[in-house]
Length: 246
Ligand SMILES: Nc1ncnc2c1ncn2[C@@H]1O[C@H](COP(=O)(O)OP(=O)(O)OP(=O)(O)O)[C@@H](O)[C@H]1O
Image (cartoon, rainbow, N blue to C red; front, side, top):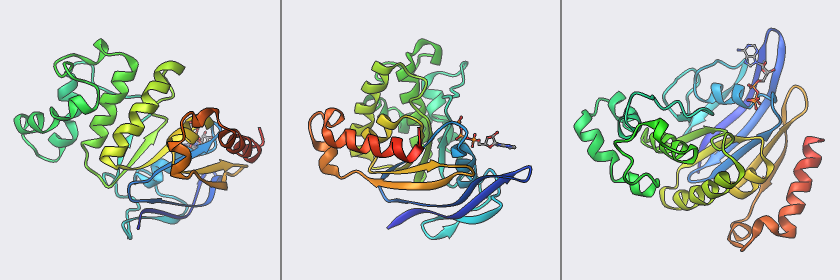
């Protein structure tokens, strides 16, 4: 079943088309990447899906119902973690629960058991500036998860991290997704990241941007030890580089 269905979405700014007739789907529990160069309109599309902007044309369906112009139907994690510096990590991650009317006491009680899974044990009472970059992103992901929406939009969640932290976080992310099965649409301009994390990749290119390719990555490839060093990985990478014409 397709939980998210983006149908023929076109968006223009000042008479200039940015994205054209975008069609994409996310199935339940699937991790799908939207891969494109900077300025290709990825964030523009996310803002339409999140209900923050009205598209020039097209529709966005969540479990079969239109969510156009309806913020709050999907959870959205911005590129910058936007943790509030004056709130503890625990009080940052419970924000989605407070918004929906849960009491602070109950929200804290509900959120705490996730700290271990999200690699944040012992940091509930710390402040965001006491955390490493990777931990801050894990905290931001936990907060996104606690929105308990059927789909999460992640806008370049790992792009600000150094290569080694990023790699560790990719491993952690795959592990936790294996447990929480969050249906995810992830924006990235990192080809390796898209290949490592996704069940499926949509490649966005040309001007205005259209989807030029859709790539399925069979589970068996992800299971393969050292997938990132395999011939299959390089073949897929070559295909994407050709798609992007870079
Ligand atoms: N509200 C707006 N008004 C006018 N132009 C806009 C607006 N929002 C985005 N644009 C333009 O749309 C184009 C696509 O921007 P967008 O941020 O969606 O790209 P992106 O693929 O997310 O880029 P990046 O990877 O750098 O974040 C850019 O040329 C940008 O200047």
